[in-house]
Length: 291
Image 1 (cartoon, rainbow, N blue to C red):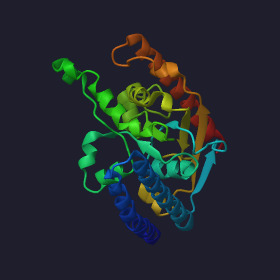
Image 2: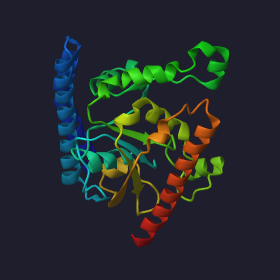
Image 3: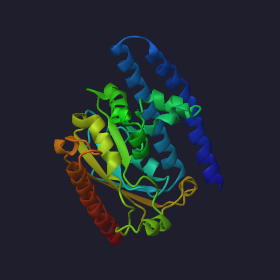
Image 4: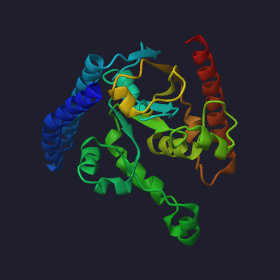
């Protein structure tokens, strides 16, 4: 308990010290000039990476967790990646920070447009250039066909700031954290995974397209069996985390058409995602066997 509270306080102090300078620089981005805005964005990213490195140092100081990270030897900060990962716990986020911070461009998530109005967090997301997207449901599109394609157009405009700038975009294909109850409710065909949602990753690829250079297929395994909670990590009760990274090519054919309106293309993307998930499920079994 004492270790957990102390770790929380150290993480909070780190956040409070660095969030002020980050917000000041972010607000300066409203001044005119593309070069100036890009300079401010680079400074914001540097502050965010420094915050993440200090968080890593705090975890190293306060917890005994061994981060067993594999397959990151050839990663670079001057190229763009799409990261897909299984999702079991809030510990997955620090695991990704441990794996990728200052090895790839600072990672970003696609966020719902409504999150920009969340106090403090919305401003932080905006400062970090997280792309905000607006998705219209099939029911809305049936009622308002004039909105067809507008969601992708909005997201593509949000991603224009990434043109010519290295970026890492993270996508949890399962859409939620894994639990046995969710697995049973879904009747998932996988031993360790929920069913992946191909539509989300298709949307990301359609928005970013040729700006992406490779896929980083991430598999996170907790050898102790049940995925731990974040508080357990803070208290030093997580002894070992495995993060296995496989770098795969991204074929331009994966964003050549409209996922929603082209059934042949949709089937191809779904097949690609299914094969990715079949391989990941088998990899988790193999990793657990040798740990």
